Length: 189
Image 1 (tube, helix red, strand yellow):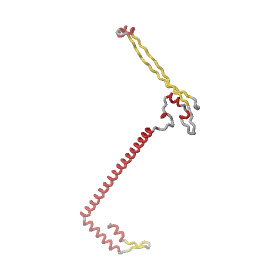
Image 2: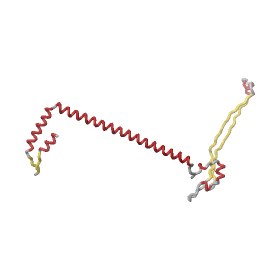
Image 3: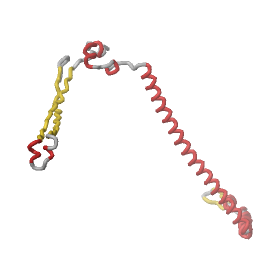
Image 4: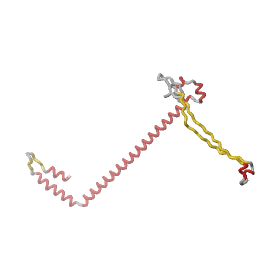
């Protein structure tokens, strides 16, 4: 833990740079065999350590900002601009840009939702049309079947007449009268 105002050094990042360089005497350095006598090779090794220094500054909960605690000259030496300081308010042009971005994102979300709803509506409309076509086909098939078979329709009518004759008969079951005509009428429907 670092106390207020103390500096902590963080290190450990080491970078090694190896550079090979060679030099030779013109023409004599290119001769086979003895050319090595007129040339030289050298390796240059550079080592860099990255050390990060962190100075802890505690902000008071009473509302003081970073600018209240840090000397502005230190910030100038470090090349820190006011926008880099926590608690800094955005410039009007930056605020407008941010608002434009948020508006664009909201419009995009609305457009995506509307496109999704349109797609779902098209699917529902297709299903409704298909159901209407299926119902129309079934009605046409039923009408064609009835038109082809009038003898079956007459047989159904005869059965209905027979049931009407039976309607006059009443059967008692558990002390309650049951009319059979209602059952036969249901079959005709």
